[in-house]
Structure formats: C-alpha cells, structure tokens
Length: 73
Image (cartoon, rainbow, N blue to C red; front, side):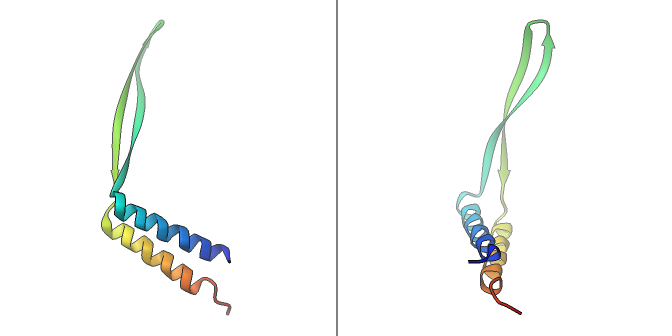
C-alpha cells in the first residue's frame, strides 16, 4: 500500500469523523496577572465547528487519493 493511499484512507476517516461530531472543543488557559506569589489565570472553553461542506470535501479528496493514488504512469 502506497503512502498516498494511506493518506487517502486517513482523510476519509477524518471526514467521516467531522460529519459525525460536527466539531471539537478544547480548554485554553490564559494567565491574566502575576503579583508576587499570587497568580490569576482563566480557563476558557473554545469550540471549533467543522462545516459539513469541508467534511464532504475531505472525504472526496481522500477518495480521489485512494482511487488514483496507486496508479502508475
């Protein structure tokens, strides 16, 4: 199996995961102030939405790599 086909499979899996979940979230910690031994920090939850059209495009590109990636010239 060529590396291009492996990349195609990975893209298809990521596209399906993007369609299934719709996005992901992560926690970002920012340091607001540090005064002597006292340190103030804030934890913020960030949400990243993945558009459906992007997930479908990733699946199509992955499928194209899977089909045409192994062909020799």
